[in-house]
Length: 344
Image (cartoon, rainbow, N blue to C red; front, side, top):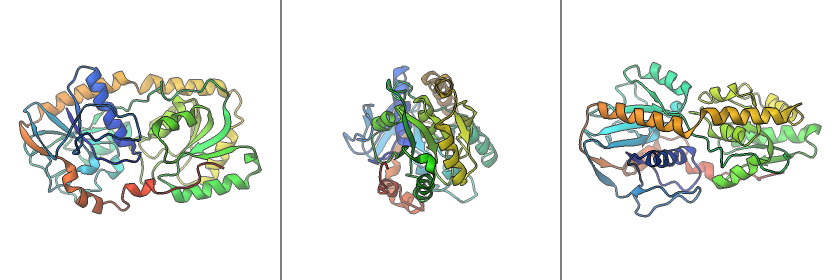
């Protein structure tokens, strides 16, 4: 199994998840590698120690399977003609951004397998791509890293402005105008390592799920916040709807920012909240497990190998990065350059 990834040195959940899948497969005895073109490349924004392959091209054997981010797909660039491939879609709302024409998807010589990360993604792809059978590979929430602190909860409301910097300015203004926010730590978690996110969430009282305006394939931050014992309120973002079945999550309709601020402030004083926090953490721990993800991956690999395909010469999608970036309304690194104040 070869997972092609881009060399972005700023936090993107999809890259971290892909790395995690390599680790899980290897722990289960499956030969798996991350493929990043630069020899010795390592991500600096999370603990990165998976085995890697480098170079712009690779020779794939007849049983090898190449896994690709959904946003690396371009119709005129088959990354491994004749080889076994998987499009690993972690964002069904942006899946067709790089190939918007309504013709055959993705326009390669051999049809790839299609994996996705949420129940909503499976349902959406069954309608958008009836010729495919989307396969659900659930995310894993690291409940050892994301866990409650041994100290008491801080009276803090936290959120991540990275994907909604404009609405976040309104959210902050609403908090400051509300007398209930007196003495409350209002914390924008931004541009910090993964481990620091876990530390902040470990004693945060309430986490606000904002997500991306164009929708989320799943939404790792609210799940990680629940695992950390936070009460969560916010937007489902489509793919994250399943998370709001948790007993420690309260869904707010999209862009009702005033209701969002109200609910976050109300939750600070929720009666019996210790039990609710524990129930929410357990809800996440029971569902988003390494075992479930590995079983789904192994079944997905079996299905991918059952499709037509064989040995092939693979080209890393970074070879057409310039074309990919042109198709994005905002370059990915733009998010990392937004630097609002971290706390107030």
